[in-house]
Length: 399
Image 1 (cartoon, rainbow, N blue to C red):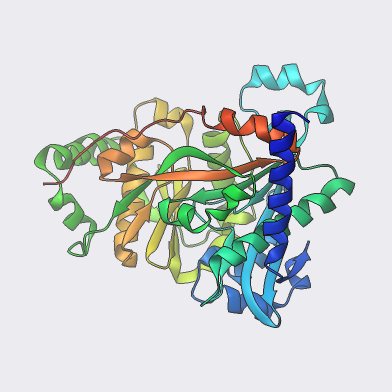
Image 2 (cartoon, rainbow, N blue to C red):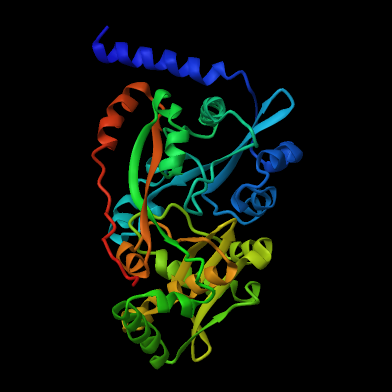
């Protein structure tokens, strides 16, 4: 046997040993209601909004059509250890933003469909795949998580194979916590950093934030963003009746995401009111209006000490005419995060330059990736290390 074959064989044996030595019970479900709700709540107690039982039910009712949820509940005897959120994402030529590529590939249809198994949530940035019960042995639980993912992938052979498995999005602490995955043949892929703004405890309002900036950056925001926005006849306001404007929000969302190189998903119109109804006092939708017409929106959601500024959409024609819609919406979300009392604001991995100018700092982030075929996985690992991503610029906007 070749050296590569020996290495693959040893890796497979070690992988089986680590996955199964945990001796933990694993319950897997296609629908959330099939699991023990009490066990799930015990595993997610004090955890993220995106791990909650309420969120799982909302997601099933208002999920993107190409995203199928899967769940696992890991227990030690009758004691819950971890809750695992997985999603199977189907990609085809309709997920490509480039119209020329879509036309060229449309003839191939289903031949280009790819199913990716994701441990995490493709709708939001961050570590939302696994929640551990208080006191759980994380190393042992991660081995059981890998076994749960393996079982889901094997079961999907009937519906169509899932060749690629991803676990997203791990910061430095979460990467160290899940290091056993490397022994299970997962490779770490560094992606664009999450842009995070740490909220100064002295900020009690958006004006406090502005006053903390150096005069150059404060003047830039007031003149280049606020003044130009207002001179264009635009206003920012909180949208109270999200359901009544769901189709308008969807229109703006699609305008923003239509030209992305790869769109993993398309959110349905009923997602927006469902999310806000669940979030309650911890969620806000800010909209930009011009002559009464919606021309932009952004969602801000408080999850523990973190506020997420995400799900943004705006009118492309208005933005291309020079109205700073995107920048003004970011400021509205930041103001809301301060009002929420959040200690940090997660702005996600896109548009690194304008977010750095807000005062955000990059948090290094990786995904764990693995191909189902052992030989291809051995070839994949060196290739993953060659993937390049944008680096956030160094900006110091504060006094």
